[in-house]
Amino acid sequence: DIQVTQSPSSLSASLGDRVTITCRASQDISNGLSWYQQKPGQAPTLLIYAASRLQSGVPSRFSGSESGTDFTLTISSLQPEDVATYYCLVNYILPFTFGPGTKVDIK
Amino acid sequence: QVHLVESGGGVVQPGRSLRLSCAASGFIFSNHAVHWVRQAPGKGLEWVAFISHDGSNKYYADSVKGRFTISRDNSKNTLFLQMNTLRAEDTAVYFCARGRRVVVVPDAFDSWGQGTLVTVSS
Image (cartoon, each protein chain N blue to C red):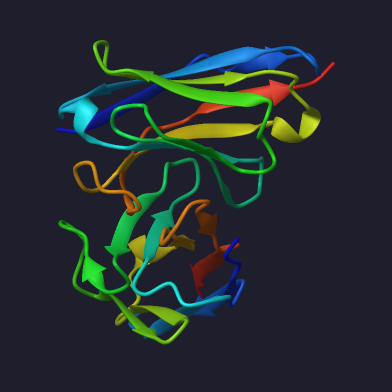
C-alpha cells in the first residue's frame, strides 16, 4: 500500500499570507492526488484533483503542484474563511490513503 | 444538484451489527463509483471501502476487511455499508463520497454526504 506523509501538522498565519502544505507519497503516484478542506462539523470538500486541477467553484487563491512524489497545496493569500483542516488523498490506486491533515488558523 | 444523505448510524454494543445507507440524488447514480470514508472523533479521515459503478468491483481497508460489506442498489440510488462484529475503534462519523468522473476509477471525491455517527459502546 502507498503511504503518505503531510506537513506541517498545523500552522498559524496572518491574513494575506501565502500558505503551503506538502504531502509526500512513498512511491510514484503520477498525478493521483487530491486536496480537501474540512471545516469543523462539516463534511470535506474537494479543492484540487489530479494534483493541480482546480475544482469548479473553488477560489483561485488555491492551487496545487507536484514535483516527483512531493505535492503542494498553496493558498496564495490567506482569508478568514480558509480556517480549516486540509487533507491530501492519494487516489492513484486502491486502497486510497489520506494524509494525516494540516490544521490552519489565523495568527 | 448532487446530494448524498447518509442514515442508519447510532449506538451499538461491541460485537453487534449495523447497516448504513446513503441515498443519492441529482445525478445518474449508476454511472459513478462510490466510497465510504470515516472519521473518528477528533481524528483524521480514513478511507474505508469502494464499490464500482455497477457493483462488480469492491475494495476494503485492512481495518474493516472481513467485517464490513459494501453494496449498492442502482435501481434505488442507494449505497450501503453492512458493518458486522463492531469494535470500539469503529466509532466514527461515516461519510459516503462520489467518484468524480463517470465510471473511471481511481479518482477524487467530488461530492460528500454530511455523515452519520456510529458509536460502538457497551
